[in-house]
Amino acid sequence: MSVYIHSGRWTSIWRKKKASTAFSTNSLATLVAGYVEPASTDAGAADKPVLGIYEGPAITSASSDYAATTEIMVKVPIGPALARMTCSIAATDEGKGLDMADAVSVHASNNTYSPVTLVRYLSATEGLFAIAKSVYATVA
Image 1: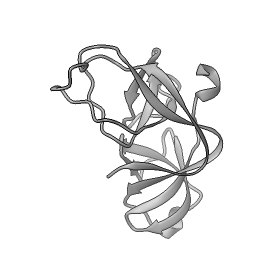
Image 2: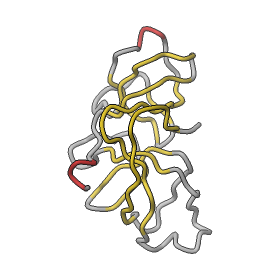
Image 3: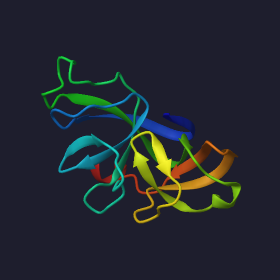
């Protein structure tokens, strides 16, 4: 499961990552207290806005900078943009704001924070999503 840029205008920014935190390649990233973190079920909350997509490389506990707050590159939307994400959805979910299950997949039955909106249903396991609450304008 992954998050991929599909269309729209995106730019790359560098921000410090949270120390001792693992990141998957092609995952949704949030900005929490000034540090980049992988998205979780509460992505989109007031204190955990979506920033963009972390394309990699993967950061694991074996990575040399795992415990550090080094800068990582995140792709952020600068205007209307779509990302292709994996999930378990139905065609009737189009137009709905949905929560993240984790940093790489959408939780189709929850919409508490709705950081992404299903724009186009592709299949029962994949869709095109607009990132509804990117904070790029506040960190540029």
